[in-house]
Amino acid sequence: MIHPTAIVDRRAELHETVIVGPFCVIDADVRIGAGCRLYQNVYVTGHTVIGEGCELHPGVIVGHLPQDVKFKGEVSYCRIGARTVIREYATIHRATGEQESTEVGDDCFLLGGIHIGHNCEVGNRVTMVNGSKLAGHCRVADRVTFGADGMAHQFVRIGELAMIGAGGPVAMDVPPFMLTDHDGFVAGLNAVGLRRADVPREEALELRTIFRTLYREGLPFREAVVRAAEGVRGEAGRRLVAFLQAPSRRGILGPPRKTGPWIGSERDSEGD
Image 1 (cartoon, helix red, strand yellow):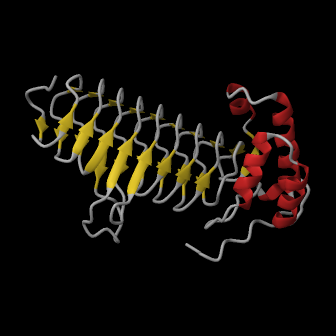
Image 2 (cartoon, one colour):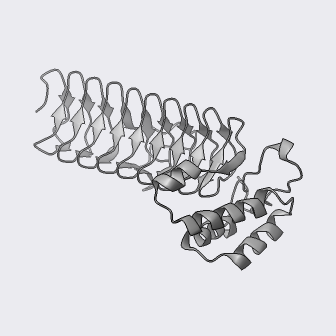
Image 3 (cartoon, rainbow, N blue to C red):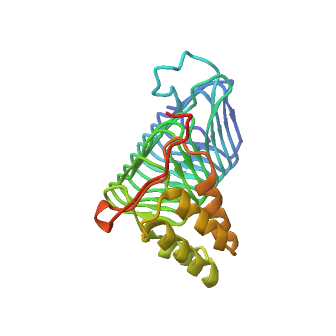
């Protein structure tokens, strides 16, 4: 059902069950899956694909031009997974670079005023609370939660089940299962997230041991990672260690300075 005040390009592909509210604008090269609802004043443009069962609330903009001076009008994409809810005035931009894409996974909950920049990759079941923002090229794994006004710098990676504290300006990679504070430092394990995800108790205890090795013993980063890798047994711990060992453009986020000595990750030679 399409409201008579909506403007839908005849080349757009909408499933017959899509509901389009008043004053929406849907451009050519847009595909919207079954069961989606667009409330009033939604703008969907570019080469954008929206999966089935999504909700786009008033003022949402998806697939618009990237906020990037390198963009020269090339064909790029924006893809939204199934059953994702995008609340009021959220913006998700398409990618910079020929055939590149901005990707958002399934079952995400993206609240009012959030922003996902060009070339970001956002996993499944990610929650971004009001006002949180991702700069370009961020990589956000499954089941990450951003508190209100949480922010991530360009090229930052955020591991699975991490919790970004409200107002925290994260400028370096956040390892899986970690909790950051309002100043953007690692403050501890995301214990609530681990419980909700039904991570086995023995694996959660091992993650706590790895956390202490990384953030409480004052070891140089590389030495701490080697020590953690030597003792890891559980699957969650192995995923954490793999994240720490992977190349990083931003380095690994450290603890608050007040907790004592910390020598952070040497950045990868690739740079920014």
